[in-house]
Length: 75
Image 1 (cartoon, rainbow, N blue to C red):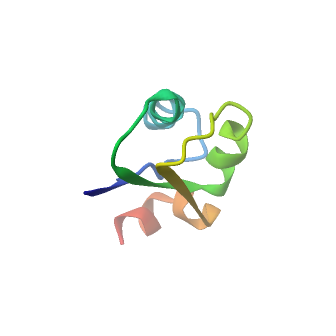
Image 2: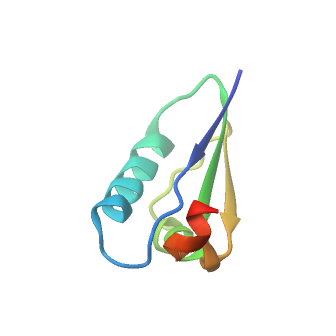
Image 3: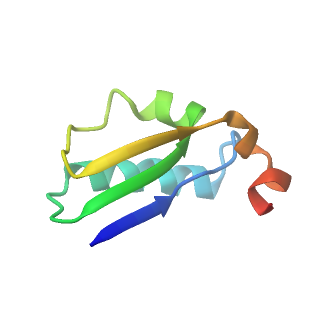
C-alpha cells in the first residue's frame, strides 16, 4: 500500500504551516511499514531538513514555492 500526503502550506506563520511542520517531524520518527510520499514546498523542506530523521519508507517531493500562494494551491 502506498500513501501520499500533501503538506503544501503558506510562507506565513499560520496554523497550517505549524501543523505541517510538526506533523512532518513526527512522521519522520515513526517506523512505517507502507511506502509514504510527502509533498512539501521548498521553503518548508529547507526549514525541516535538519530535523527530519532518515526513514527508508518516506520519500519527500519538494515542490516550487509558487504553491505557497493560495490561488495556485486551489488550482
